[in-house]
Length: 124
Image (cartoon, rainbow, N blue to C red; front, side, top):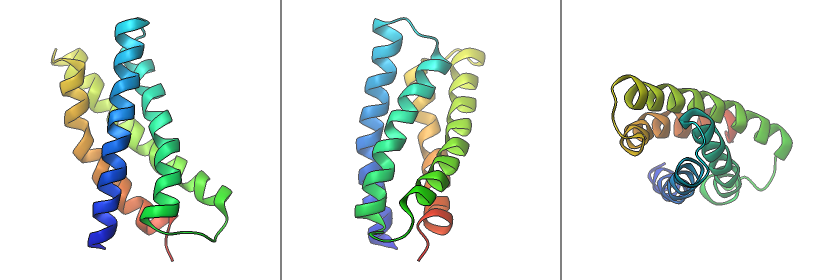
């Protein structure tokens, strides 16, 4: 399981870069709202995450890919809800910078996504 956590963390780090890059592009360049930009950036990262976690982290060559994707999306939607809630709270209510708010949401979403993916989506 240690290897899986490390691999999941590496995939998560790459997805964080994707997520933050798109988030900042949509807000800074295109002027999108924080919640819409966060939802889009998170969603793009989820697609990347599914592919790398399925084939590299959890080594799921078999199984019903569509069923796994549906489960992964459901897990990610809960993660998105957690992320949106925390980003909204810390940026709009508390008044912190949206990047700091996003950064604070990462550990919570990471823990949820790893264990839900391992136990619900990519179980052997």
